[in-house]
Amino acid sequence: MKITIEVDCTPEEARSFLGLPDVSAANSVYVDKLTKAMQGVSNPAQMAEYAQALAPMGQMGLKLFQSFVEGGMKAAAGGASEGRGAKASE
Image (cartoon, rainbow, N blue to C red; front, side, top):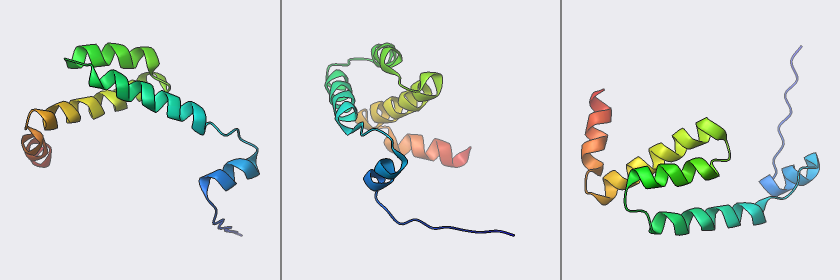
């Protein structure tokens, strides 16, 4: 026998229902700090060092953040279309 239950609610409602804490204020602070840090970064190595110190999900979070930064650096250098072409051909 299989029973399926579908719940339609917002993330805030689900968090409240499950008794999880509201971490939106902490998330806002984290995002603001990362945004400010990215504005002063001159190279990817500097960003990776900073991200490693703040990575909330350990190595997995760092890899995700690293791919985000690399994509942003390519786009800023005008290589966004080149990166897409390389991925499509792989």
